Image 1: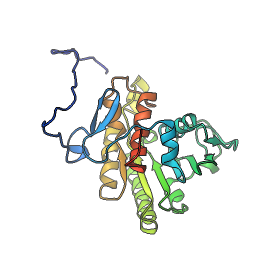
Image 2: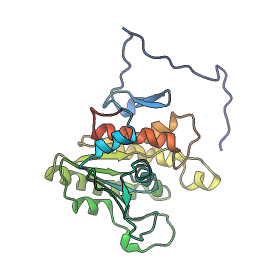
Image 3: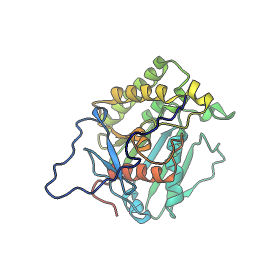
Image 4: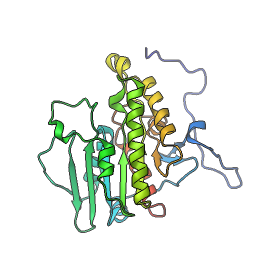
Length: 272
């Protein structure tokens, strides 16, 4: 396990900006090749939406009047915490709920922004908790009143490693049906899915949560939601392509790029 392969060529690669008249690089699908690359620390997408950079003020303007609901594990809670730390006007209500599971809610009254986070239902490997706070994503989506100013973001992968693939498939199918119902009712609702990502592999993680297991689940997730009006944040490629070490919880530079990607779906023509 974890045996390094010595390079036989150059130890680094220099990426130069595109020259005028040079043909564009295209990628027909996410699964047929890399979905993007980093240039000067900024994630560039091959095909699809253009990713813009957002300052704190630009984020506030982008999310003005919007409700953003996040569901999943700690890797999506990172996004919730990033936005709370970045936006000075966003204030979290202390509901005395467990930090890891929530539910949590933050409000920016001046800009009319609502941000929520809730853990997905079991299996979930957090410390002892009140099971009443564990709701399934499908049930949450069915109870959601969507509208053009509603954004739904979710991820579900990290806690399913030790379980049979059938359990994961059934969970995703349940969520897919709920997404279809939500989009049938309110087609203007924006749905964004965060994919799995590579992680640091200790002996325990390698046995129970290895990247091989997660890559298989990542492919299943993409296949199940293919054809729906949903957007993917390719966390797998964004972590894999970055020079920082793999981590279950990607470090801040990668999280910032993920947030820029999310905001570029919400506000495709804005940014700063």
